[in-house]
Image (cartoon, rainbow, N blue to C red):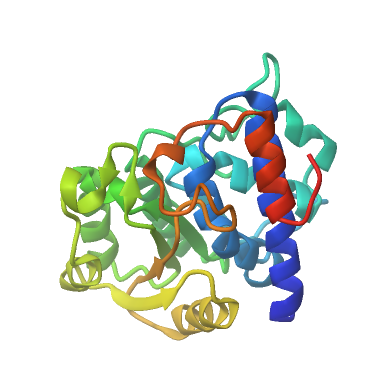
Length: 272
């Protein structure tokens, strides 16, 4: 798919994110907006998935290790055709399958229930190992937040992936520099990210996480890399696309009020 088309889809995904969180009255817009371009590239260009057959053998799988960015995942799944877009406004509502964090038992297309940070990449490593044993051609993708790298089990998973040379695994770090309590460097410095993965035996790629050409090139290079897993360290902007949310840690886990939501939608070229 052309980058211009992906940009348009990503803009729609961002509009969906604002609608979801606004109607829910809670949620995580900042990290969902920063991840929107990366997830759009995955679901609309990179991954082999079939909305008509979500459990298809040989499919690629995506694990959202930063499970709080569920609004972005749900928007991509809906726009890709896994379920009706109209369902997005039920996010976090009683009885809705769109939980605050993804549930693999409730929604087609969700490969792993996540939310407890560090567990997603750990599950993805297990999937990659299982895929190798089963001679499954599908690739495993997982997305982590940069604050999530403060979890010890992330590095246990990274060590295992490097040891077993899981070249069917591609991790993406959404490096927006902010977490719920502020800047990563003030809470618990995670830098240098690339060098840490490299010493565990990973192929490291560093890109602009909002540049579709760089994103697609990185996915292509990851597929071509043999004998080691790949991590894409994507530099992003928390709250990307909404001026008052950009680079503002206060929007990590807060829903906009009606006035703010209307302003956000106007900036994104949509209507609430």
